[in-house]
Length: 377
Image (tube, rainbow, N blue to C red):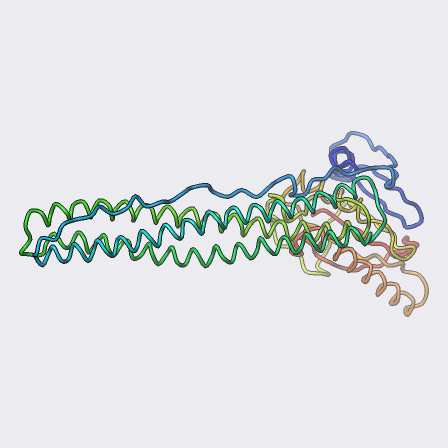
């Protein structure tokens, strides 16, 4: 299903999904801005969805290179201050050597993380390409490729763990650099120095100060890389979950809802039973047979709604026919609730946060079969 045209057609519309047919019927909802009602029918099996997952958004990391400039050698003066300068110079030399090693580790980790991410996106692209042209449900080849993509994403997670460990080492060196700078400045106050001692101290102070700035910048970029890597992994794990749903159903959806920059809901969803949103439902799914094919259209409808109203929340209502004996009504209500739970799991797999959706149950004298209604609040 072409995501852009489908969203434009479905936004603000009522979708009725029946297991008996493979069609999606649309009509304006109470909140739509159209001046007159309209109805159209689309056959789900004849439409396509353009790949929109994060495979088109490769990972981005910083590129700074942090090589210390080295330490200027000095000559012994034979004074107490001169000995202090030699000790501080040795400490700075060791610190710079450690910083250079950490910089090399960072460059290697960046290259490795990008390579692992590229491998992951190649696997995702292969899966999406096959889903785009059409395939069977639960295609074992795609399942194997999905498992490979998951392994590759975990390799990126391993890179993140190493970055965190490196950040701890760099932070320790940042503290050491600050200490050396203070100790160097304090050495100017030690008595018994000759002019050469102060000349060498001035050079050492400048080099220590530059090293301190270098380590701070290294730590800043590394912290930014860790933050980007963390956000990237969170988004891709959500996309991977949505892709698993697509592979299971043999049809391409799009980018996970949680990976998009949607605003949080304006108010927390109401608890079950506290009331539902008024107006016409956004989606009606009829469970008149087992396993109705509803997820593609459900994804498109919710996606279009969030594009129009990024802070939208939803009410998911299990509707049971109010016919027959009390025992039959109770059984219908229980079945309708299980259907609603299934739809809720679908929404969660698509990346919609559970705190955006409230779940409730009702009976209807007009319902002919168990239904699940989704309202926009």
